[in-house]
Each structure stands twice: as C-alpha cells, then as structure tokens.
Image (cartoon, rainbow, N blue to C red; front, side):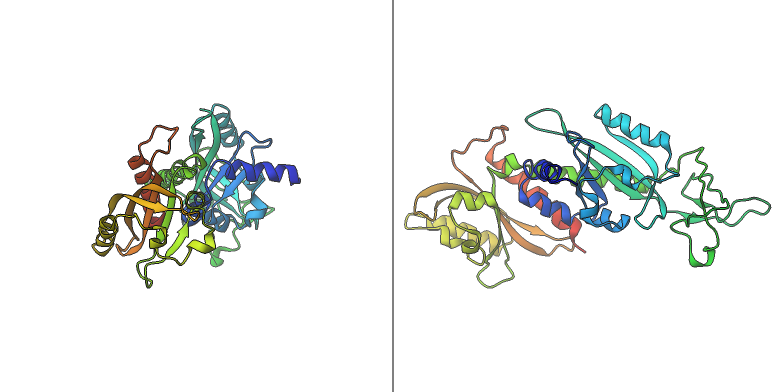
Length: 354
C-alpha cells in the first residue's frame, strides 16, 4: 500500500471519530470490519480483533485491502454481486457467504453489512460489515454417493468432493481424508435465527460506538474516568477534549484526584454532593466552578455515573463535563450529550466483561 493511500485510510477513521472510539471498538468481541467507499478500491479502514482472529490475518495485512481478499475459487459470484449492488445503492444486505482464512481453509459465515451516514454530509461515509461464522455439523456419509463428509449449516445443501483437494475448515482429524475442491451451491447456506440475532446485535454495538464517539461530539464532550478501587480515587483516563478544556497535559492529570480542578470559589456543597454520590454508588449531576491550569475559571456542567461490568460490579466512575455556554451544532442538550457518552461506555464495558 502506497503512503498516500495509507494516509487517506488513517484520515478516514481519525478525522471522524475520537481516539476513544478506536479503543471502544477494540473492546467489542464481535467480528467486523469498517470500510470506506469514498477511497479508491473501497478499502478496510478498521478490523476488529475478533475478525482478525477468525481470519488468521494481522491488522497490517487487512487494513487498506478490499474485502475481496477473503474470497476464493468457490465463493459464490452471485453473492458477491449482491453485496456490490448493495454498496452501489447505499443500503444494507444480509447474506450467507463462503470466505477463506489466511491458511486457505474455507468457511461459511453470515455476512451483514450496513451503511454509516455522516451527520454533516448526509451521505454514506463508511460501511460496517459483521461476519458471524455459521455453525456446522457433520452429516453421516451417504452410501453410494460421492459426498465425502457433507458439512451442513441448517440448509447448506451440497459440498462435493473431486480429485484435487482443499481441506475444509471444521472437519475433524478423523475425517481428514475428506477433501473438497468444488462447492456446488444451488441453495445458500442459511444461518440460524440465533446467528442472525448475533449479527444484528453486533451491528448495533458498532453503530453505538461510532455514533456517540464521532469526532464532532468528542470535541465538545469531555470525559474522565476514575477508579474507586484505588486510594484517593485517581483519574485513570482523560479524553483529549478534557485536556483541551482544562489546559493540562495527560501526565499531569492521570493519577490525580479530581479535586485539583477546584479553587477558592468552588462551592463546598457541590463537592459534598459528588462525594455522597460516589459513596452511594449513584449518578449525580452538578454545576460546579472549576479552574484551568492557567487559573482561569469556568462553570462545569458535570455528570458522574457509575459504570458496572457484566457481573454488576462497579468498574469505575465516568465523569462527563461540558463547559456552560458551549454550543452543540447537532442540537443536543448537555444532558443528552452526557447521557449518550455514558450509555456508550456502559455498553462497551458490559459486552467486554467476562
């Protein structure tokens, strides 16, 4: 991949989403890619960890490439054309597809793709493609037929053997003598309702992160996270927007208690309200006078909320702060902007928890 193309790919993602969006996407357990139809060749600009593990490729081998790299000699051309038509018409599509891993083994998957529209442009800026492997079960060999270890996935009908061989993924060691080169696909390998639900949920997870962590929102909403399990409840994460608002560098913030933002005219009752909410493990919203590094003051509309993992235990508290008087060009109130950020963090934490 040429350097100019690499620059376009990095800009495609970084210019639209905040730094935390990439972190949140990496925490999702789903198999998905994000592609940019506006760049020549419609390349992949992001690939999830789950997808890389499933396909056997590294991120460097995938980002910048077109999704056709996962197709092979037995991938149904009709299915590929259906995906291309959906891209051309800027619409979603769900289809069963035969793809290939890096080691050459083919596997059936449910491919679900949806467009992502830019808030400002009103046009498609990305496509999110989720891939859910279709579980297969081995059917006993049929006497007198040339089917060698037929692999089924619900209504997966015909996978036939021929003289030259490519080993099918999913065939056990005991059946390693069964090899497949031609897949006569007269009927698509249909996914189960469970697999379709997994794909739909994965799409919602990805879109939630992209929607709430777009760069336009990130410029206006400041976030910090504190760990209540550590002494003095220190800050363990600070967004770029938080650093811009306060004037501090990241190394000056991490490890500090939030009280370093207070000053002589900060209302003690607001501090007491925050302390009580943390002790009670409850959310609270306050208007509090804070101070930047240069000693200038500003009214901070602060919302603090506990974030629990999948087991119900508090992972940390997130504080979303908006400077009073800041303008949101998307028309969201401070409360809605804060709750959207907190909601997305909760989604990411819960689905990434064991």
